[in-house]
Every structure is written in structure tokens, then in C-alpha cells.
Image (cartoon, rainbow, N blue to C red; front, side, top):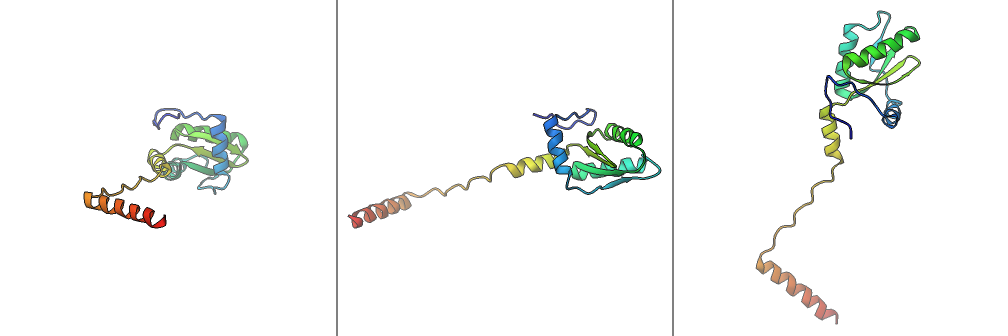
Length: 139
């Protein structure tokens, strides 16, 4: 079971978790762009906001491959996130949001069963007499 989110802890993903996150990220559009100025504090702030809102984000990065690899590692360290994928000019980061995790867990729980109201003695007797009448009529 995965440990809960701790801002100081480095997140590592198992290959199966990484595969599942890559599959989820496939349909996403980039929410942050790294332009010609590279990795700036504004990019880090926007990435932080996006991670809080979505957990899994896609970032489009301009520049050379070595720069993009360095930016992915820097972003992961600065945001305490797990680098999921770097393919072409796309970077994918994931960090669990405790609030969203609680909401997901709650949504997965089955709805509580409705309690049947307790019957009074008179209601129980009336129910019992109805069932015996039905049985005797059908014979």
C-alpha cells in the first residue's frame, strides 16, 4: 500500500503504477508550457497549482532533450512529485493530492444500506396474518 503524501518524501513509482499513470496521461492536454526562458519560478508555481488541482499533469517543454530531462528532474524535486514520463517534448508529473484521494476512496465505497424501519407488535401481527391468509387461500 502506498504511503500517504509527505511533502519532504521523494515519490517513487513501481513499473505498474507508472504504466497506469502513463495510460491516464495519454488523454490529457498540456496544462503548463516551458518556453524559451526555460524553467522559471512562474512555471514552477503554475505546475504546483496544477498538481494540487489534478494530481497528474502534462507539461509541454521547448528546448533540447538534455534541457528537458534536466527540467523534469528539477520540477519533480521542487514539487515533490514523481516523474512519470518524458516523451518528445512532453513531460508528465504525478503527485498524490490527499483531498482528491479521500474523495476517490469515498466514491469507491458502496452506499450505506438503508435501515428498514422497526415494526410495532401490531404491524408484525398484521403482517403475519396476511401471510397465513395468503397461504390458506392458495390451498
